[in-house]
Image (cartoon, rainbow, N blue to C red; front, side):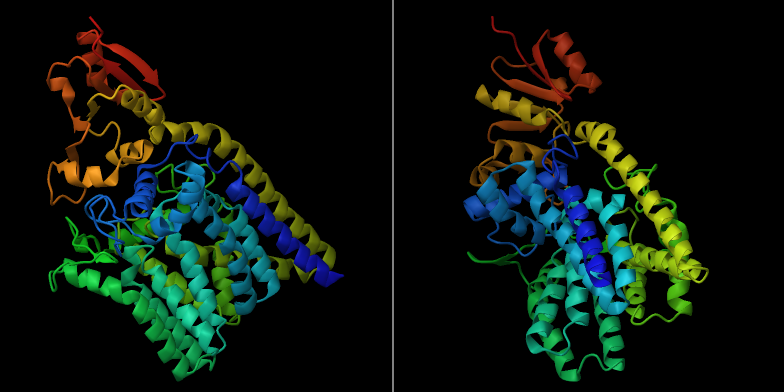
Length: 513
């Protein structure tokens, strides 16, 4: 009977987490509108699947040039089957992240059950299932966030391999795929792998033979990215074939990674206050894990050291690599995302330690304590979801180009040259919403600066991106600007243009004579 209870509570939590990640996925966040990075990743998936090339003309690139300084490729490739089946829409674009986020709940439970016990595993899974960070992250398709789920899978596969060759190979392959999720982690994944392998070897949980097989498997998967680094460090020339491409970036961001005490302190402040000032990553009111969880976090970290819980050293290795990453980047939530699963683990360990402590008094006291914790989390979850599905969704629509899709569709119906006021609509959003033919884009696009970290097109066939307010409007051509763009609105009034408002955007044109 007790065993049935343990199983049912985990199943309930996982199902709750799945519901929180999938309900109205194509609408919330952003009221159906996509972030510019989502749009670019989705357009690249559309381009590769329909034209066999990305937006820069590369066949199956191991790393997307995208903006000019690159974009991680794995999530884009995972989008292809969903976009092929369901079409170019927000639900299809976000399904890979939502599925991976839901799978992470199951994998985290299995991982913590192996590293600790089922009570710790339950509390960790509960916190992950209902915390704002993971709900928000799982519901929009930022490609670097794909690393969270893939890395959790990779760690679980490694610690549960039990020296079985096929499991070791799967573990190595999965860790190799981590490198295709988020390039900044290239600096710390070797340390994470060395740390976990060393710990497992010392504890006789992995053999030398298994380590060799694991590293060979990982190395084979990582080789194209090693070649990518060599290409962009100008050690070897660019590699392009009709099957796979290893492209040279317009701008290689090797200088972004530098150790700084200030960066470390900023990251620690972010962890404690649970907010980075970017509304698409976190909210000040609810934080990443709900602010009261900080107490459990501290208790969990202390408990894991004092009690010397079995195998929690692996969580510490993971956490330490996340902290190291946070010290070499300008911190925001998605940049230091690999640190948060260990944080969730420490919170779960802290809740379990609290239960054990009050359980010394009596079983009734332990049940009361568990009830208080559950009520606190449930109350905060309900409050967060009310905000997230309401006010937050409306706010994000304004951030994420609400009305751009409709304005572009109406402009395209007129089959005229479309002038977009510089960055009022980012060009990846234009490519995504119009399903712009990739071969036409590659052959016709002209960039302002071809070596910039963030390329800005001046034009492509049928479109121009510039400050058109410096010239007179032309009969039969369409002009798009944001409704809060003062110069754009003045331009409409000064030339007495016809205009139509779509969400945050105004489409204007010269009146017919």
